[in-house]
Image (cartoon, rainbow, N blue to C red; front, side, top):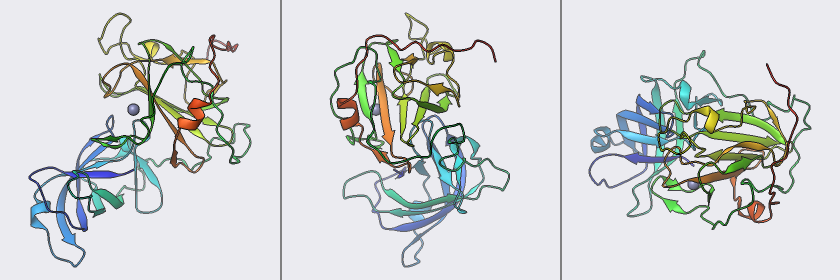
Length: 295
Ligand SMILES: [Zn+2]
């Protein structure tokens, strides 16, 4: 899922290894900007034309972007700092395409920088260990919606890893299955995407993004968490299939209100959500789950 664009004039590509430094991080868009110090072709020749331009690495989708530290662990994008050394190997794009692909990418994170917990870290919460099974979903939007398959559509930032389901702003979003909230992300700046990720007992995860960021009746972008997420929704919270978890919106880079939904296998690899969404159970009333009030 990594993609890389080198800014600047049209360049003839060849496989290169790049050493450079982080000069900027955009956590909301999942982008890492790197100033190369040295770019070498596979036969060791310097590519001074590429050393002169910044490389931009796309580290993943909103809320999940991370980068390897070279020791087998992942650092969340929010923890990446300018000045860290970057090493990458970039393979050529198809002729005429602007994006290369990244065969290898690592940063020199210091030992005290945060690392992502290993996969499976939340199963201690009384949930069984993962077993592979077909993904069974409750339709993510109350009452169901029409949608068309745009999974893997070729967009300018790379292949579209999810499915877009249009719906009016503030339409209720429902939990896709019984599981846990493994990530609830509020953008660090106005206009960024509100995102939530659920994990099922079998290890599948479902990501929702572009949740509402507006005050009702406005396009202010100032709605805050109260108009994006259901009040109980916290990282680590349990959810029940069909329960209200938030509201449709257009936060982040969205051309109109819709839900962007992604599904991943227990090993973290992206899988098509089309079959599961097509077979999902549509519900017309959110499931009411009694919850304690307070801490
Ligand atoms: Zn989308």
